Length: 144
Image (tube, rainbow, N blue to C red; front, side):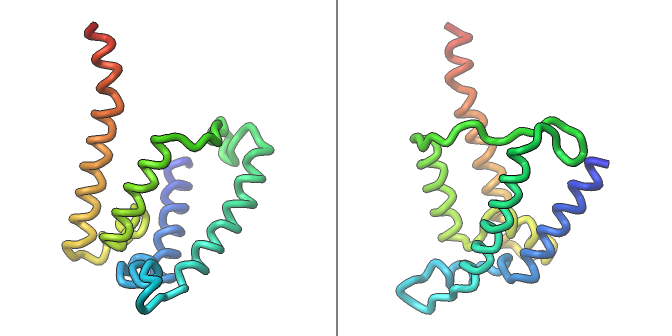
């Protein structure tokens, strides 16, 4: 049941991205181009997502179990630290350069084309590098 619900949620998210045009890098870059031909449509999509997220997180924070019965796992910290800032910067730079963030890039894989494939490959490589660097201090401590 969990896999089916994950598939259903992912399909809904992907279809929403395609319908809203957020899988089009030109639309995203148009939103980020404040000095040129600015396209505000992404702002409306983001506003809608924030509104849905606001209610969803409020609902989830009042529960200790998910709707499927699993334990609820919500972020426990609200601290802004170096890792958060650096990760946000890396995300923003990648988004601005490529016009993709992870969700739209994955949805764009269905259309074929080299650009989403290259982005997803680079994204996976970045995730692997992060995991290696994240566990490097632990390995050094264990070796000492």
